[in-house]
Length: 93
Image 1 (cartoon, one colour):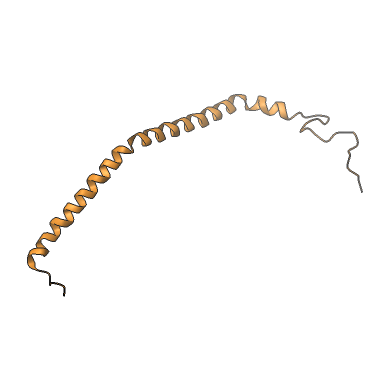
Image 2 (image 1 turned 135 degrees about the vertical axis):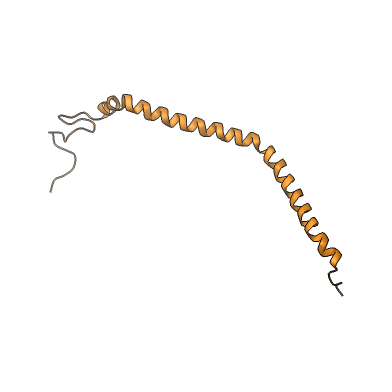
């Protein structure tokens, strides 16, 4: 049969719980320090991504109209231009 809780074991319970929490906290800190290099690498990669996207945005601001002008030629047909004057290969109904 189980022994009833004695007053002495109830008094030791908070110390046991605090000791377990302290051990868990120190283990967490050791694991956090081990992750430090990965966190640093993540921050560097995130910074690289943000700088790359910012550079693309700035480049598009400067050269976007030039690039768009290469692909959109207004006038008589052509690539991405208006409808050509000549006949198409599609039958008309």
